[in-house]
Length: 326
Image 1 (tube, helix red, strand yellow):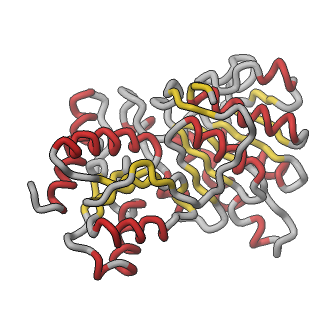
Image 2 (tube, one colour):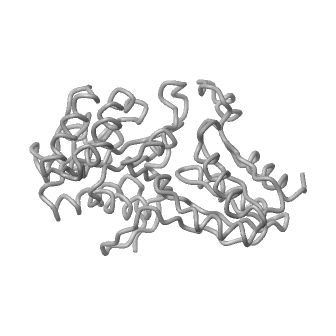
């Protein structure tokens, strides 16, 4: 075990898979000569050369389409978006080609491709560079959607995603690339669709994923000072969702708060709320509470960003509400 950065964990995953399988390629804007916009691919061009680490033009639609065609013909592309906000330019290739190829070909063509890059708020980047798309892509049959929260999970999940025969959306965060965590030296894989209980508890279940896990953990630490024991579940993927782990936790704690950096309408929080009330209604001792971003485009000013996004104070307030202690 050693402590490495989130970006280093991603790089190790890609390096190991490219050494293991010569069909794995990396492509995207600035992934080669510049070593990646966030230095995730640092040194990869030197090791694997320009035939396997490809700098692309600023044309997400174009290089995503090339990747889909390559994947249908035996290549395993990793496509890096500088931000998933730019994936909207390529969404036709992702939704209408990658996600549907297996079904429309009657099982004749797999599309083993990973679309990866940062999602959500990254500071003062304003509305067009700060949106969350996890729930958008999770609404698409044929895709898997992975949102890791720490370096250990990021490496294990990315390796699994690269080996998967289906297209995978792998969503990171600019604000997490420098985060450090313990990662083993030996190889390991983490299955997609299995949530992780990051912190056991007895009084309330908090469900989250991605970088907002840090908000949930900080809130749980503050709640502990008031004698409140919060169980924290990190979904790790939002398609598929590990409903069973959530339901079993709610059966124990009898209360649920979902914290998610996305607009409330049609969010992952909404989906989990439906599923829990459908399968654990008799165990609930209070209505389920969601902590989402406000239903508005994200502004530029730091004070307004703080007001709109989920944070520790809002999470604590929601937990105390379901415990009738607000």
